[in-house]
Length: 281
Image (cartoon, rainbow, N blue to C red; front, side, top):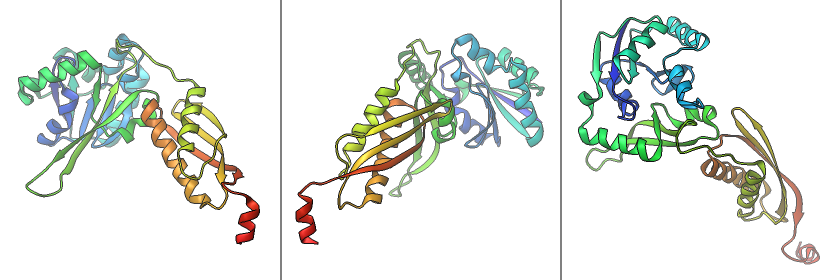
């Protein structure tokens, strides 16, 4: 097995360039901030960006904890890759990662300055310093359950040739880690319930009132809505719209991973006198 290292100080855009560097060197596997990645999949490990302190993040990134290191070592042994790209802030960090994962030292060191312009590096550093945002080189859908409650957004890279429709080359994820100097935030169940109920009531066919039940777990939240629905409406279609819209709005506004949305038509309401409806029928 051969290893190649991509080295650059924190915030210079290593994770942003990781997939490109791997492709250019014919490498399928990447080790970045505590996780083992192949293509668009996280295969093993846990992201250092979930740690609550910078010290914890560093320990995670270099696989200092035996259980964490063992999980990734076992997966590497199982898959037996020909090559791995390892990201680090210094060669010393790369050495520690290799030691903890029983990997050979890199046969080649690529500096971030070799693959990024001064302007790109400067921009990356400015974004890190002003917003506290980090890149994870996998799609948002792949890690969403592990980052429930974090500010998480997709970063999609497109290529356009001539008049052809732009084709997406790759997707990365932008996350603000727990240990960011910008602080933490919490969202109460009452707030989530209010957002969900208000969103549901904006759907045509849903009346006033209703209840929302929130169930929390480590991977995200489950929602159950009991609503009033207009008599004579297409009940299944209305409830499907509510289900889709509530999931989208909650995930967008709170950063929480919505595991499921159950919508129940608890009661009917009438927009006109039911006796007149009966007369028409």
